[in-house]
Image (cartoon, rainbow, N blue to C red; front, top):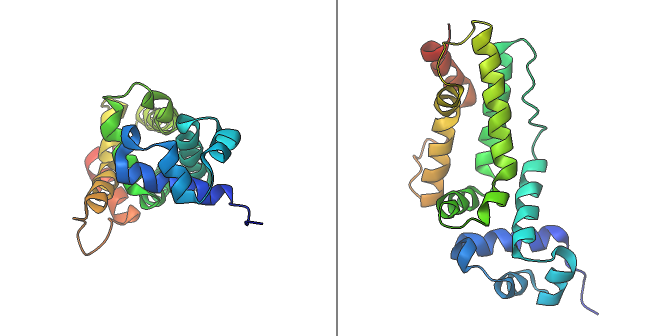
Length: 186
């Protein structure tokens, strides 16, 4: 009797297949083969490809610390927590994020797949807006401030996914925070 394949093994196969073939090009047959299971097993456990990819994204996000992004009243501590979270996030399957971002504009089905990561962005924008209202950050569109804060990490993730990341590694969250506060702090 064959050993039972774990959910993590299946979700790892989902990620590998989507990275290799793109979301549109990945098939449940390819995913099943990569996971070493029958395609029927995938349908029984997850229903369809969309649900498989959603499960893989949710697993990646849930393996990281809780990104509540609630304000503690300490601007530096809160923004450092955010940067550390995103630094970990961009280290976990960076190519998957790149594939989904690039394909999202061409495939309406991906809108659902991006809902959870976009909800994180909305909470982060509200955190920044709260500190702007308190006068601790300059008044600018919160989305611009968020992009300035986490943009270098996202850029590094893209570079890593493309195989052109600088040899010195990703930017350090503390350094990013210091630079951000010099330009955006009140």
